[in-house]
Image: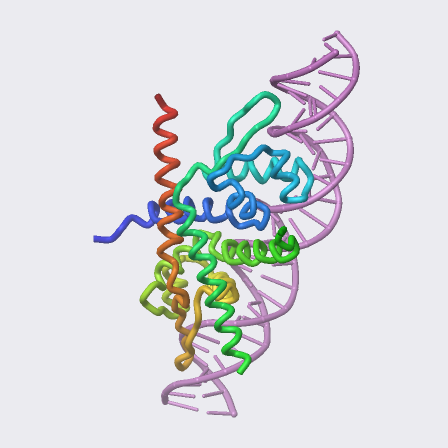
Length: 109
Length: 109
DNA sequence: CGATTAAATGGTAGAACGGCCATATAGCCA
DNA sequence: TGGCTATATGGCCGTTCTACCATTTAATCG
């Protein structure tokens, strides 16, 4: 029995949406900074070193993807990581980078 | 002691390059299809259902990121996954999707 | 209330992406 | 050699992304 292609397409589209949300240096940086420790937008803005509005929009992307959630406290908004599966992601990315380095070194000989 | 920000920036840029290479439905589909089984471009083209040139370019992206490698055999080119750490990636993505579904269902009440 | 501060939103310009078509390249075979 | 097939590449165009600036919104505090 063949799987329904429509469903598969939607499945990969959904996956891609998540991956896309992570596919930016600033967002990765924030994601890592937010693991196990919530931070306000002002702190993240300082960390990233971009305009506050830019950071706010990046956070909206992460939130929309379901990767982070926020909490309002007075004037400030604190963000934190919402999911618990990021380690696998980091390990994978690092694994690829390590692999690439190896390939690159092997190619130099 | 503070870490050098320049290096950190480059590190996150490198990570983002990998994540970006995966952040497309067709590329995710191919990546999964290529796990443990090499396939020619024609087969992948059929699988994805896009123009052959489009698929070829997607494959170039995956290759450039170091995620797949290729092997020429006669007129055909066979691609296969080059890294061994994709499981962590899939698990992470699926984890987020599951989490999102849960959140969504909880919100309906 | 008015001033101040944190964050979000709207607007916009430039860059990057993604699709297809047309074309080039390369290997195979008659 | 000429024709056929599998891939890759170049070009073009519409869409999306990303950054910043300007402005709005919301909460706090005189």
